[in-house]
Amino acid sequence: MRLPSLFLRYSSFSGVLASITFWVFTIISITHNSWFDLSRHAFSDLGGPQASDPWIYNTGLVVSAIFIEFLSINMIISSNNKTSVISGSYLSIAGVFLVLVAIYPAGTKPHTFVSTWFFIQAFIAALIYGLSIIRERPFMGLAIVLIFIAGLLGSMASWPSTAFLETYEILLLTIFSIIYAYILTSTHRIG
Image (cartoon, rainbow, N blue to C red; front, side, top):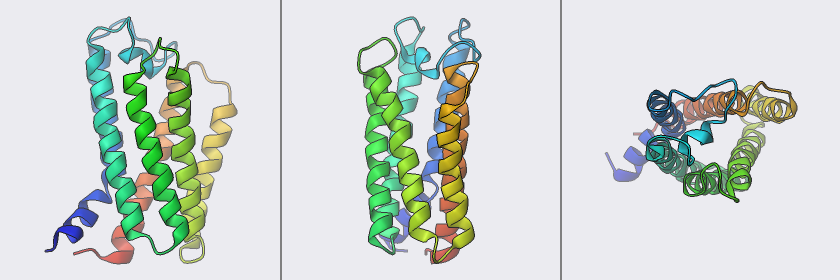
């Protein structure tokens, strides 16, 4: 099996791995920070100055960002059109913003900007990808566009805490990643 085939096979699941990585590191970080309350805080508080061992949460963000970068490369290499290349490019930028969330944790001036733009870039990438496949895979393309709409509406809703909103948005991005992996593995039969 050639290296590109191996990379494409495994990196198509990188979005799911990014989500799993995020949740594992976040749960570990929560166990080190008994003060954390899902209904009052943002997940980023686990990487901020009041956290015990903030490196745990921030390391999880960086590792998750690496998986997002693998997914963006996969999207670009596997693309059938220029629009899906653009989607992969936006996703790559989202990965950079996720690293910046770790570099500028809660309590620093750029934090709100970089954390907000991570989600904006990731959802724009999903929207563009959904639109790029809507002709060949109308059901899947529409499902991804609806994920974008759900994310947009969710960002305008009233939530008990930022962590609840983040959970909702991350679950939507995870569903997008699952759909992407399904599309890629069922369409290309890699390897």
